[in-house]
Image (cartoon, rainbow, N blue to C red; front, side):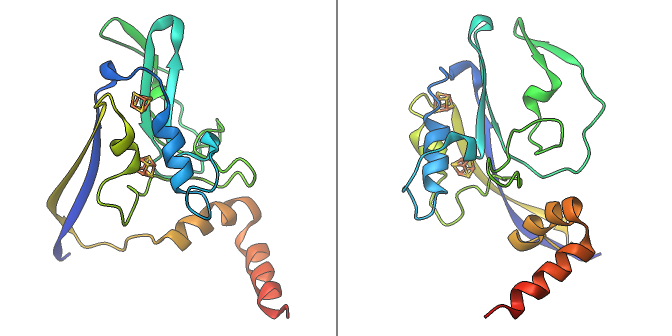
Length: 176
Ligand code: SF4
Ligand code: SF4
């Protein structure tokens, strides 16, 4: 398979510096509202700060890919004297929890790195320097990249089936 150079965008997290202010969640949801900055609803944010105040845990996690089945892992990790469940680090919108899903439709949300901005909003607004944006170039094998439309359709196909979804789309296209 042919190799191509792809720009990889990442955000590194220094969770020890996080104070759980959740400004990152607020800014992410405001940026992604329509029209932009019209509303704030942190349930729509593509970043979630896992919070356990009594255990002194604040852990920002970014929404990753949608997955149709939940995993079987329920391990616990102790890092720096703090205990985390495996789900604390997971980025997936999965069937076993409500995280990273549109509250009304249940459709999955995914971090898009604030496409079009010079740097992500959550990084710009985190005043504690928890989040650091990085770009690098990598040689990867050329493979089809799923566009926003396909990513949005995948969970609908899982929920309603391809046949029902297709007939709904045809009906919609025939409406005046
Ligand atoms: S804005 Fe920064 S300090 Fe506040 S919750 Fe988010 S990552 Fe933590
Ligand atoms: S990079 Fe943008 S889309 Fe991703 S979590 Fe941060 S504010 Fe949200």
